[in-house]
Image 1 (cartoon, rainbow, N blue to C red):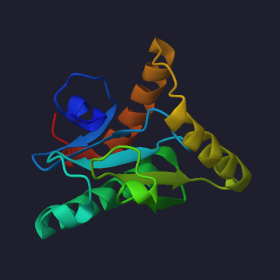
Image 2: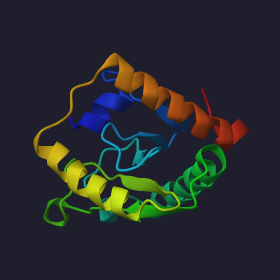
Image 3: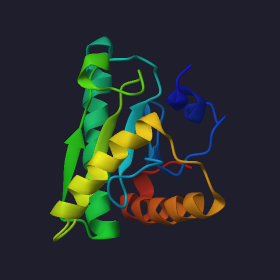
Length: 153
C-alpha cells in the first residue's frame, strides 16, 4: 500500500483541494512552491500506461482545473506540470501522480532552490507538525474556493 493509498483511505492526513470518484488532488507535504498540488487517481497503478484512457484524460482535466484555481486563488502566473512515470524516472511513490506546481513572478531562483530541496526531502522526509498542516489547509482552502462548485465534500 502506497502513501497515496493511505491518504485515499483516510489513514493519513492531507490538505485536499479536489475529490471525485476517479481522482483526488491534495497539497504536497514538501511543496516546491506555495500551492504545489498532486493529482492522483484513486486506482493504484504505478505508471500512466496502466491507466485506462478515460482516467488519463480525466486526470488532465483535473490538472487544468487545479492550475486555473491556483492562478485565481493564489495569484500564480503559470504552472509546471511534472510526471515522473516509473522508478527509472525518479518516481518516488509507485502510484501515478501529476504535480501541479504554481509559478509566481520573480520566483526562478527560489523555485530552483526548492526543487533541489524537495528532492532531498524524499530521502529525509519532513515531520508533520500542527503548524505546517494548518498552513497547508489554509492554502488548500484558497484553491478549493477557486475551483468552486465542482469540488465535492
